[in-house]
Image (cartoon, rainbow, N blue to C red; front, top):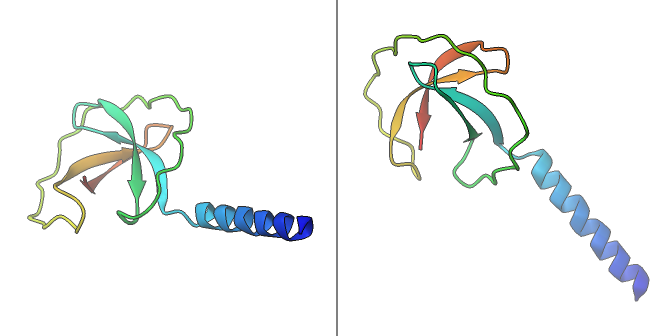
Length: 100
């Protein structure tokens, strides 16, 4: 009986680690056109589980003009989409569409 309990426990832990290793969420720095940045989770799907926030220092980003947004319909599970700058820890940024 004890071996069965240990086996089930190990199988459960293996399943949890396999699911978290394949998670589609990661924390990224999202900045506005004025250089104000916030660390937010970016997920591939609305069903993905958000991992704990890693410690990080906000990048120093120069102001940039926001591009003209193209009309889009937000994906299912989100309310709105807007242009945001995705930045790495060194301040390298690209403009992208973020949906919330």
